[in-house]
Image (cartoon, rainbow, N blue to C red; front, side, top):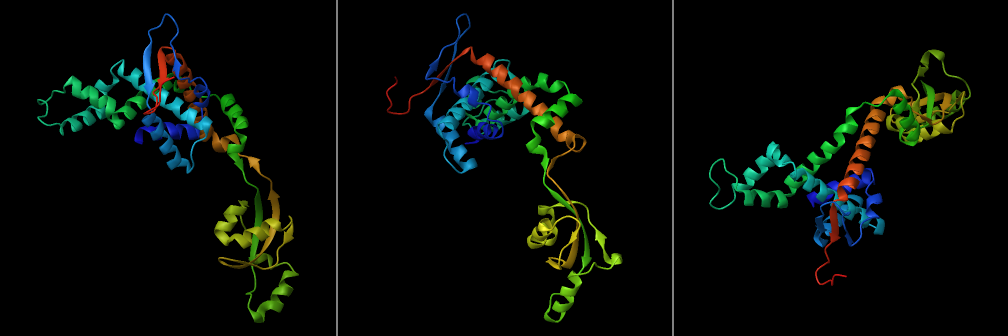
Length: 305
């Protein structure tokens, strides 16, 4: 399950594997002139990814999503293989510590300081923590070049326009409040008269522009709803809030808008960097995949076609 969760989360956030999923067939051979390496994805691995999807989304995957889950498993297997090729595991303290810890449970453990190749190799293949570590290390390597260059101001401006909905601010109201009479039986007539005249200017307190959600959090949902139903430059009748009764002057309604770049520059910069990294990894994986022959193992009892 741990192994499957990583690919599923990436799919939920980015969905980039769907393009690759369309290319996965029961068997895809490598181009001529390049060494072909076999990648076989077994049914239990796909089932584990499907269970993780249900745990995260609360529903079963549809056909397209299931194909994307398979594509993500292929990606992870290729990244794992490519991490082993240069021997990343030998210089990774986390991997070596994990292998050493696992070996402590092996009967007649190895001599101090020695890790039998056969045992270590088996743990590299079977330990989900080790596999995830190596996959992530290889992915980070593929991202390095894309993350080395910082986005320019023009890059950020274009990204903000392209992702305007993500950075859209809700409508806000700019208001002023003044204490109102209590809403008990003896004060009803006074309250009705109070609503017909402006409050004492000395009692008016200005508040910053706030969204309906912000006002509801501070004063209660009925108070916030009444404010947003009141036109600009008008006083409300006395309103009961979570902190007392007030009359509210709605000075202005501000429509929804995209946040200024200077206010969200850091978030936009990180978005651009992560998008560049994802594109770099996708391109590298597409290129690497040409040297692999991918097949899906038949389920138990299924006759291979």
